[in-house]
Length: 146
Image (cartoon, rainbow, N blue to C red):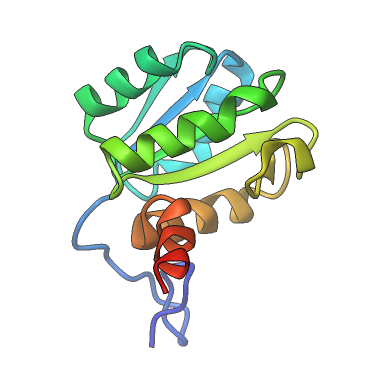
């Protein structure tokens, strides 16, 4: 039985039928290298050097690239992230979202965030979970409907 990390109970590697297309959006070139190293086993990883303040441009980039998951670096732009995730939910709800921040979990984000320089396995698991679940607002919107 495969676990969340992609390995079977016996430790054999499980082959993913559909590689995860991940787009990392950050201004941090060091994080680019780390994300590439951590996520390349899951599938294709692309990177955009951009801030999250220009929400429309970021959403257009994501729509153009068609990733399965987008990793958003919220370092130094916490106020912009909630609106961006909401707009992504409205325009591309199936795209999974992972938020990272150099300060780790941050209540100002209004959404869960990973420590940007935390454990590599945490980032990999978060991307795999986002691939399965889509936008984190999806669950919240479903719960509000009831």
